[in-house]
Length: 169
Ligand SMILES: [Zn+2]
Image 1 (cartoon, rainbow, N blue to C red):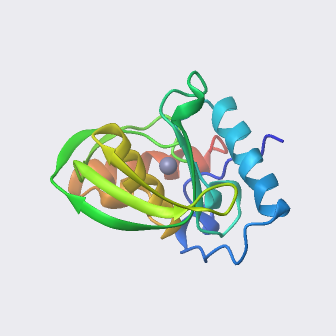
Image 2 (cartoon, rainbow, N blue to C red):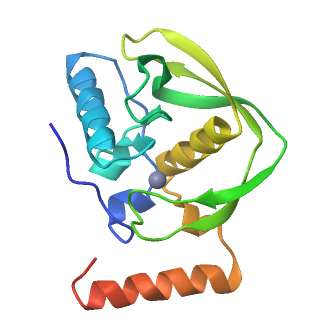
């Protein structure tokens, strides 16, 4: 089932999520909804808080459904390693229409549970490292624009407030 994606300003997006207590059928249904919602958007990643569920899990597929092997389901993820730095343009399904350059690690290793509840460790470089950090941020209530500084951030936030006031957000 495709779920509505929350947008910047909705409280659930701005608060930390809690661990998934047990990977059961209900969690697997949530995972399936997240995958379907991500592909429909379309996007390369989606975290549970973005569809209004304050739990620590995310899905990523850099191929957006073209290669099965690219689909990553991460439940209760933690960083094992993070190193280096990259600067690239980034966007978010919860901040539609806006992009900005964000500092991210060049390499990130994440450990968590897969859809079956088994432990997995996945290494990400470049775009995948960026996606890991972006989705992990969602689980802590942080959006990419929260990581911006100065004029660029003010500009985006002001535009969003304007859109909200006119009912277009
Ligand atoms: Zn996002």
